[in-house]
Image (cartoon, rainbow, N blue to C red; front, side, top):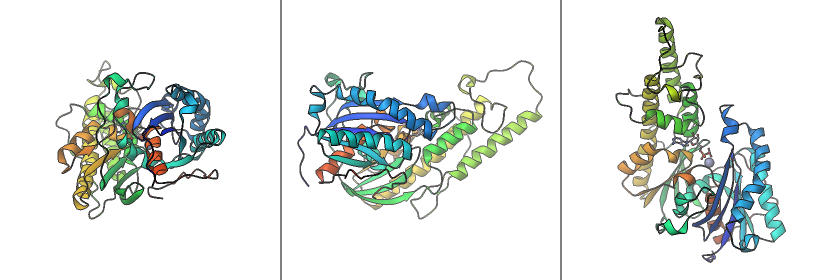
Amino acid sequence: MTQLPNDFTILALETSCDETAAAIVRGGREVVANIVASQMDMHRRYGGVVPEVASRQHIVSLAPVIEEALGALPNGWESLHAVAATYGPGLSGALLTGLNAAKAIAWQRGLPFVGVNHLEAHIYANWLGTGNEHASASGRPSPSRRPPDPPAPQFPLVALVVSGGHTLLALLRGHGAYELLGQTRDDAVGEAFDKVARILGLGYPGGPAIQRAAAGVTGAGMLPRAWLRDSYDFSFSGLKTAVLHKAQERQELAARLPKPQAPRRSARGGEHATPPATGTAPLDGQFVGQIAHAFQESVVDVLVTKAVDAAQRFGATEILLAGGVAANTRLREELTRRAPVPVRYPPLALCTDNAAMVAAAAFFRFEAGVQSGWDLDVVPGLRLGA
Ligand code: KG4
Ligand code: ZN
């Protein structure tokens, strides 16, 4: 363990899925630049991420994204002390682009290099300062409006990682000392949001669309919760199937009713541009809002109950929320309300995939004396604690 200086500056790359990202982080916590080129519009038309398209687009976007990030350093390349990149889990072709670019940079500049676990990186977004909540359009923080950074989290911690590809609860006893308490047995929670949004005709990405559709809805019924008693594991596929059945019943009912004379716009009609995945007939806005609400409540209830239980059992000082679904306001609110300890979650821009979180995780790896060899390969199925 070597204490690194506060100005230790890391360039990190993240290309595990559909965001091409480069970031510069100083001292493990200060975000100097956080540049993300999203491919979301490209994948939207397919209703999900197409791996081959993602890899090709990373190759196109990487150089400009890195150059923009380096533009935030007065001495550019000369200011860097180390390089990092995500090496898993994720799409293998996509991971390869960022990992190889980072290795090439480190090799050429003679800098230390470390590969980072994407799940660990999501958790480390909670170590970053709030600087880039106030970022300009270019992704650079504006120092004048930057509040002081909160103190770093203290171990032991419970982390709830909820993203498009993963759902897990972990106990963190120290940097790099993780214990997986539980994980999903089927769909990841973000995946469930995306699939349910498709069923309801809400488009991609599903999380924000479901959150919008559920906002302000009252009188929605309940959907099932898979508790999997005495386990910190999760399951969301039964809930997704329950939504599918409700949508099918609703469409069958609508098909039996006489058609209205003129097309009627529902209160939320404008949002449902995509036909639902269950068939051709669009679902009415009121039904969609109620199901979105009930689905979100069911997911949030299970996630919060298990995270709170784990925090109590293991005497955590805080609960850290991480991953793309940590952007969900209902989840943040409910966890904060029910948790016996403070809940920390990253600013919105650091919840979804970005490279600043990769740099933060890398900083603590370097401090622990860890470096990766040039032979490090991508590990698409990498787990936490591996
Ligand atoms: O962490 P992330 O950017 O990518 C992965 O590593 O998977 O997470 C993306 C996921 C998507 O499934 C998206 O629908 C979900 O995060 N998401 C949300 C919200 N914003 C993004 N889910 C629920 N509520 C949100 N507000
Ligand atoms: Zn992610």
